[in-house]
Length: 194
Image (cartoon, rainbow, N blue to C red; front, side, top):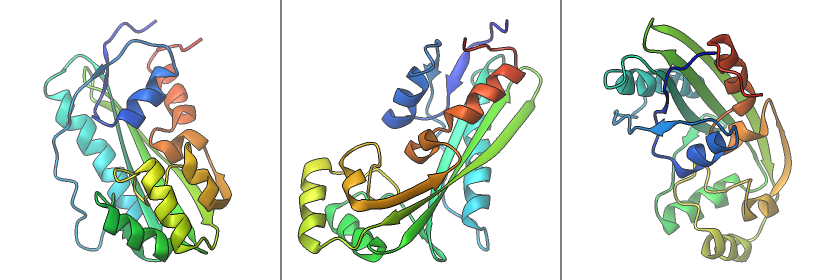
């Protein structure tokens, strides 16, 4: 059994809540990195790179720990959807998304800072949205205020009422941390969940 500390390189309350499901001790550290996409970088490449950069940024402070980094990018056609941050931006996003499908790429990195062994995977989820009305958008946003969620909708909450179909590798990836992949990565480092 591995007794290295486990660090979640994220201040996301959603990722913290997901990791708590595994019932293992962990700490949280803010990665404090620039999350701007690079020119010509695909959505998948952005998620991959940022998950690794987050883990590496935190590893400098925890050189003997296992570090979890994760990043999610939502894609509508060729347009990357960021966190809306405001009500007005969320309204615009949801109007654009209605009747369409969004692909969510959630990258997960587990970095063993002790020996620099790095595992990175990407979980893909496709979410199709109903053709909802402007009134439904306003009602949803008033009730849930998902302003810190890429795509402006939380599938684990009331946002499910906006969705017509979901397909993907791991339902927890859509929330922000692919637990199915994480369990396998942790096992490869000697951390057993059960």
